[in-house]
Length: 239
Picture 1 (spheres, rainbow, N blue to C red):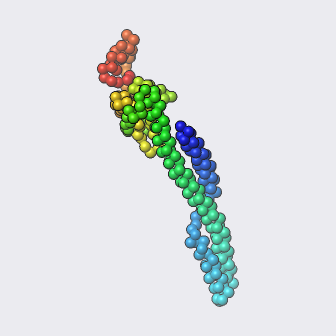
Picture 2: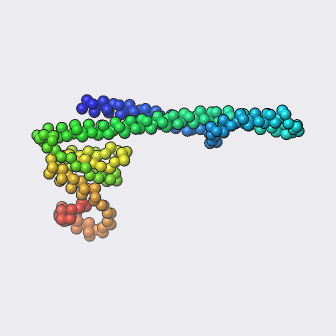
Picture 3: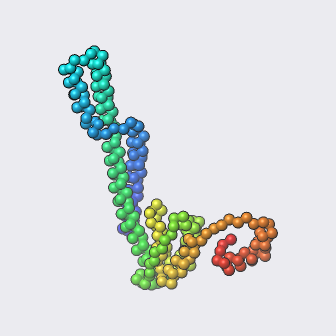
């Protein structure tokens, strides 16, 4: 438990650092010019200026041509200054991106460790609650699509808590934002099998909206909705 707490603190620190880097990254992008340049262009400017200067001072040029060449040389100097600023910002952006990726990799590793520690703690707690040894518990994995997650969890986690209480199991879902859509069900074999069956019924269920006229509504709701209750039990549906 102590190690799990340490991992959580470290994970929170990484999250704060990632938030700071995200802010820095957005700021850098906001000041980046739309015009782009390359390191090779920057490195080649001095050579172009030297060549133009040599032609200007050694060749036979009209005054107008010399003035034009001087303007072109000045434009190249300004371009070099611009590229120096651009490349500096571009280097900063790559630094921030690299640091962000490193932190994300660290966060992924910590998440995996935390998941393993959480399952270990949950296993011990459930074993104590059931009065059995941890080795008597079994663990099964099943697929729970993200789009059905809310249906399984229920409002404020009520549906999932009720399922765990009914079958005396512990259900662990992949953390939000994870690429995994797996759920782990822990408990005694019979409870795990029953819980998985209920989860599959919940996640595989479909819903359909029907427009009912007044006579049908009266029929379904009459006699304390007894017909509705009977229909739900007979067909395994919820109206």
